[in-house]
Structure formats: C-alpha cells, structure tokens
Length: 110
Length: 117
Image (cartoon, each protein chain N blue to C red):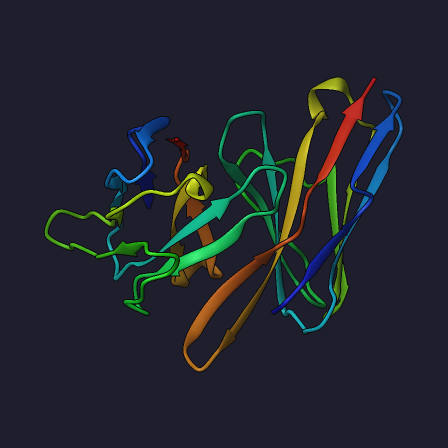
C-alpha cells in the first residue's frame, strides 16, 4: 500500500525566508508525485508535478528516490504563498487514484 | 483551464433524508471522476472512483449503499447520501481526471458542505 507523509501540520516563516515543505512517501512501484495547493476559500489546485521538473510560482520539488522524498522548496517566501499544501501520490495501477498527505499549512508573516 | 463545478455548494438537511450532489466537468470530458470527503483541518479522503458507464469502485470502509454514485455521462457524476445522519456532515469534493500527452491531472470542484441536523 502506498502512503504519503507530511510531518509538519504548520510551517510559519517570515516573508523573504526560505521555505521547505517536507513530503515522504512509501510506494512499491514507480511513483508519480504531485503538490497541490489550497488557498483560503478556494478549491484545490495543482501546483506542480515531479515529471515536469518545472518551477511554478517560484516553487520547485525534486523527487529523491533514495530518500523517498518529494520536498517542496522556495528560496524566498511571499505572503501570498500562505495556503494549505498537500503532497499526493498517483497510483496508476489502481485506477489513477491519488493518495494525499495530511497537508501542511504555510503561514508567511510580513 | 479545465473547470469542475459542484452543485449545491452547501446544503442542510434533516436526519433520515437523502441528498444528491452533482459534479460536472464544464469544458472537457472526464472518463474518471473521484469523490473525496474532507473533515475540518484534515486531508482529503478518497471515497470512490467513478467511471462513466460502470459501477463505482469504493474505498475500504465506505458504504456503497449509503453513498450512491452515478456516472451517467462523460461530464456528470452524482453522489447521493442516503438516509443521512449527523455524522455524515462533512465537506464533499469531487475531481475529474484527464490524461493527455502522457500527463495526468485531476481538476477539483469547489466542494459541497453538507450539514445534517
């Protein structure tokens, strides 16, 4: 069975500080990992996916298979980054369903 | 971008009644839709996977006779909470999946808040 762990419920940083939201996974197959973000009073939306290897809104995430991690990073946090962030793993062998981590709330203080 | 709508956005019902929630993909066709449940300050828990024209696949612990899912077309899936009880009060979210050019993505609806009194 697959599992996604986000150890931090809340991460509070000052504006301009670096941010790292941790995500670890356990999965026996080849993982496909995503980060989703939910801003206040808005729906869940995709932030980035590991296969794209892209930077979105200054965020990047690298899949580390050795450490089974997919941490989300941003060098300089902005107040508008404050939101709930969910790491998710796609299980292609079981109907493409996503397994979500418990989420980390990022609070960026001015 | 792809848009998923849900209706209603919130509903209050009495214990013992049934409530239907609709999920629509507005500008694309989705062969697969997913239904999630989210409790306050908790993560999304997958309830079931809904495929157009076939029976839904329920996650372990989800009562299929209580949470009826119908996926009648490529743009509409419905979740009916039958004989609702206060413990069914929650935030229900649907998503619609698309895959193209090797990329997979789920687009999420805004959610429906159900309160059972």
